[in-house]
Image (tube, rainbow, N blue to C red):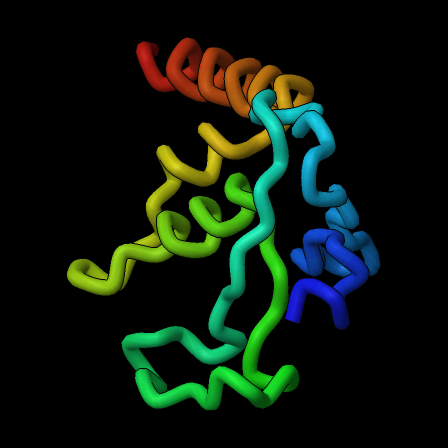
Length: 109
């Protein structure tokens, strides 16, 4: 599976693909990139994924594995907004921070 992925992370958001390579330094989360196999369909939905079928798997870096697992809380059915902001770039965190400061200052009145 990693060979098929050319040793790169296959996480996609819109038209963008992560493409970090095994051994790269993650520019957002820091640390050395280690790729791991990821179920295309969540394990909780289809636990019997065929290990030999490349269409059922993709390569993800550690940051995107964590993001995928933590963005949705299956027990409550709600988005885990804390994990989403935590995984965002510094620039996006600042946008969220400015939004929240404005929101709470306007809400005081």
